[in-house]
Length: 164
Image (cartoon, rainbow, N blue to C red):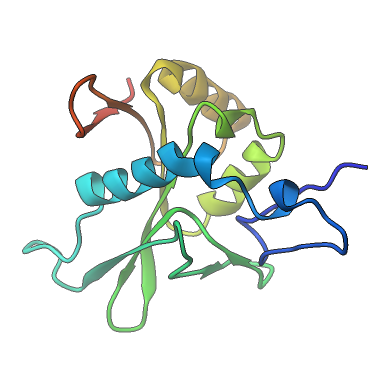
């Protein structure tokens, strides 16, 4: 029996006698994703800024900081949430995917859930940008933009590129 851990939707779930790798994650595999989320947030969601002094950026990895309630009343936790103060009005959402996370079978459902909650930006590995952009268009997922990301060899700096 397979256990699906939809951490983007609900809280941490550890069934009795569950294997920790299935429910708690594996930090050695998630290191790249955690670093990419932090770096994309710093590069593209650097708020507050002089232009938007009331915006605040919340990064939900490795620890959750800001959930967004969907139309069904459930809390969703995109990787990056930008809210406007006062009142915590959601303005921007960002989801960072890796080659490993792009194989998740609930990915499209997750993207659709995030799509109607604010201006939703999707960040994928650069080599998958065209493929994911075509998928998003074909399935009519409400994404404002698909962006490619990569780390340049020998540098510890992320490069984020807008998709065509």
